[in-house]
Image (cartoon, one colour):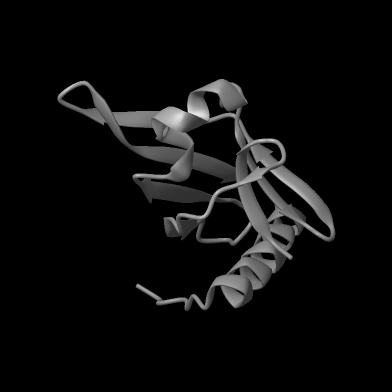
Length: 113
């Protein structure tokens, strides 16, 4: 099962909007995850621990990014944006395998730009 976590052991139930970009030669890319009002920013989650990154977990292991930013409106957290950098073709393939599993688990579809 593929899940996203901000604190290890706590699955995020809010499904993000995910935007993928890829270099012309296909060797590198970025994935931008935007979560609107995720569970992790709810007041009751504060005692669970600090957000140290975004962890993409599946049966193959874990993909990690530390590029995690909260979005605030009028001083209140409203969302989280994370950027996962894909540095080579094998990382791209691994990321896409995770995304396929995550999409299947959450009934998501891919829309090409």
